Image (cartoon, rainbow, N blue to C red):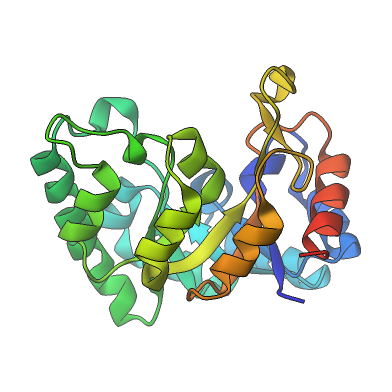
Length: 253
């Protein structure tokens, strides 16, 4: 079975992380994905302590999210974090609404920024990519899509494909897997509840308990370069349920 990872942002409201690591290890996960809120402020000793906690539970933080600004302004600290925690891939995960370009030229320029941003990380041996949300799949005035412009401007970076956000943005995930499959190095595995359900969880669902055709999606993704499959739920009400049901579903794909 493909190794399964877990985006720790999903557990931000269920502290401490040491307890989450224990739950994940016992449930059969082998990897986790970090984000800035976990490690951006840690010193060397704090990072080593976090690594020891992961090791104790049979986990490795194989991938990590870092904000674009942090990646640009804190190169050495980002590299230290990645090395200490055992990462092989680094992803810029998001652009705040007030920072998003309004046109195709702006998104192309942002892609070029990512291309430049990636250099020291790729030189150090890390995969470097962009993680999408829904806004990259909303048409611009010129008819193009931000996702197209980003990758046009950054031909050397990869894609961590968040399939559920592609769908929420109005995109056909199978078409995008086919179009950008050579770019995909990681996948966010999450699900969307039927319309009107799970409102207390922002309309998300545990993997396999929503509307996405994950068996077919996994089959399509096997033709890509996807190395990491990362369970995520942006606002779960029950972390134990999410952890248990998502890996149980994934094992059947």
